[in-house]
Image 1 (cartoon, rainbow, N blue to C red):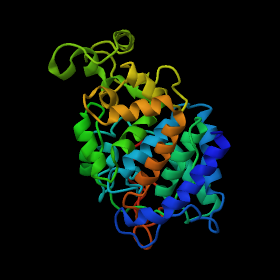
Image 2: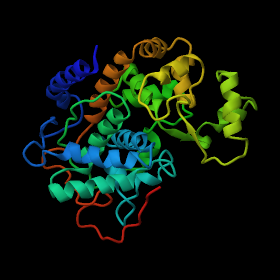
Image 3: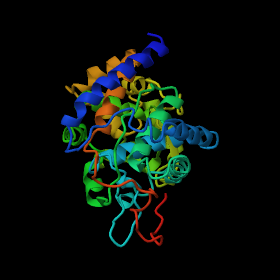
Length: 344
């Protein structure tokens, strides 16, 4: 299937999804749809894409970082932009939660996007929608699929640091626990594998997988599922007791491209994170057949990734009169400008 036909199929598919998902997740007064800003801010998607394109010239990993922001936002109280809020007298920022602290990034780019959008159509586009649009742009700019983003989310006025600590999957977490966390949000095993495929681009810090290299599960030995050659490569990049913040490509071959190499890597025991490799190395798991399918057919992966992104983007959105449209993504409207900046 050619890519142009591929995009048309997705656009049709997205329209179908837009009629069904509001009944599946949370309570909302209005459904999300792809034309939400057609009259109020028709250029919002191109504005978002333009800022990301410019940033990619100096920061090739920003796309993966922005996609991750959307993921970590949606997994805590739904896709409401709560991850963007800084600490204040009333808010404990999700940025300080264990899965996010000194890890998630890209807040300055979201601020730049918000400023550009506000200059074009003030007080109209939510920060939560900007995250969703940025995720799609990041994927498509890296060679992945393109889809019509469903919009109409509003921004939360609260954050949930405790929820971020418990709801976001850990890179060293077992497949059973991760499957439960996805299932709790209406995401099945196919969605889990497809969304994990986002690790086909971007980087990870040594500290997120160092235990696999030297002391897996307290054994004093490396993770036995690690390819021996790959293990040596990783040990050179991340020496024992070395700098845990050193970055390593999630995909050693095409680190900045969105493709299906991630799944081929799992088949040769070259998944970087424990949570990645367990998709293929957990005996009897339904995820193994899905990995094989996505590895052999990139179009199948892209189709399922888009479907999973749409489902995830519809997790408990604030719509109608709920929430607000923040003028500054870092703080709720009317909050003091003395909030402590939490960028990583």
